[in-house]
Length: 542
Ligand SMILES: Cc1cc2nc3c(=O)[nH]c(=O)nc-3n(C[C@H](O)[C@H](O)[C@H](O)COP(=O)(O)OP(=O)(O)OC[C@H]3O[C@@H](n4cnc5c(N)ncnc54)[C@H](O)[C@@H]3O)c2cc1C
View 1: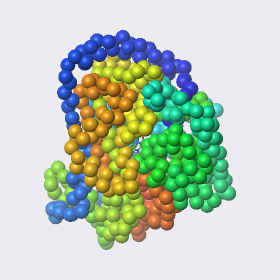
View 2 (view 1 turned 45 degrees about the horizontal axis):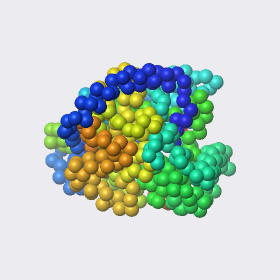
View 3 (view 1 turned 180 degrees about the vertical axis):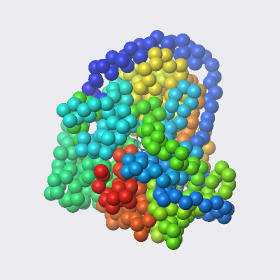
View 4 (view 1 turned 180 degrees about the horizontal axis):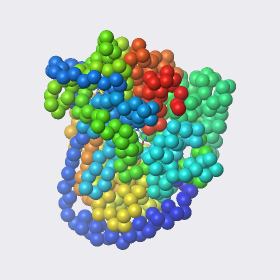
């Protein structure tokens, strides 16, 4: 939950100064935009599904080169990069990372145009729970935590989301915060208050082992089974069973589930839905519910992790086969740039790849991904001269439109202290939440960019009726398998546990989908744990 109800005075002040200067520049822009027909430059990007789909055919040339390296990491997303960092922290230098895309970061990578950096997918990190010492350590290392006071971290204010943090367009007006409050009946408000109270109980409750039922990373959660039945029903059923029937609550929780899991309340388990609200402990009152964000989104965190893999990465390298052999493990990879294949002989390999890919690489894992569901997504990064609306609440970092098809947009220059910004860049988010995500995925890859442009505009026009007159460019980024969606009977399933088990102490697995929830923290801990397991034989974070 990215609530921004209480404003921090210093950050508000900095932002107000910047906002006043922008307002002064706006009228002339409005005039020049309205009077001419604007051509929108369209660009289509996405994860490299064409190269990825070659895994079905395996029509690669025979390897002509051989590399020997003690440790190999396949996949340069957060899990893989975090594993690389942990190797370095353990004093191990002889590892290599293979990444199929032309850059690192996976779902946390970013794009950039002449006006701003922007996230391609992951765009924020909530404040960490204070027991997550590994994450605190990383945030210190990357100069995001700058001090500690009363044993609580002090964050660099320029990396905390400036006010206003978020707003919701509902009943033709913008309100602060994403929880619908504007124009509600008393009965609806009561239900919302009760729901939030219930989530606070879940947040504070612990199992018989003394651990929180809901925590981050997932490995910190209590193993007490008394709440396991929540994983057998959908979040929608749980809401209705508990008399949370108001449309405003159903819409709000649906939005939250789509935000973290890609699928809405009809599809994700109640355990997962409650985890969204109850796992973050909000221990530090000083910061309310704010979050960490940057113009490039979590690309900033990738940049820091990149420093651990200098000269140890081969990009544009698709790994297509992995076999145990007398040396240890034989890995076959295809260099998409030079059109040649290479054999990598390694003692231990870490597959930091999602399981829908892993099943094509390791024959023992052919059926593992059968009950792993991945929601497709697309994002649209839009360049525009202005974002006109009815002025009922100022442009915020996160801007959500009630009952829209998509999940709203983030304003990427929100953290910018520059006084004049000639063009704004926003990133709009859309997850395909339906009971036929395979069909949705096909459509995402097949339909022309004009189709997605029209969808984005029709959504944004609910709150910004003439927005198309201000837009100069739209970049649609397609992500066929965006994130793992914890549908009922997945998080507590045996098959999820099995998928994490290594093969003969030589082939190891680390990806956020193995935690069942796709967030930075899970990917980060997956990387640390797998290296600890390889080096020390323990999965305990240390
Ligand atoms: C639209 C969207 C928005 C999101 N927003 C947030 C957010 O705001 N905050 C947040 O915390 N999380 C967010 N996430 C979740 C995000 O997925 C995680 O935070 C994290 O980036 C996952 O990292 P990972 O390493 O586990 O997986 P991935 O990002 O999937 O990394 C896997 C890597 O492996 C590579 N690879 C795959 N197959 C091969 C192969 N055969 N050979 C070589 N390389 C291969 C891929 O190219 C990729 O780089 C979002 C996700 C999406 C889709």
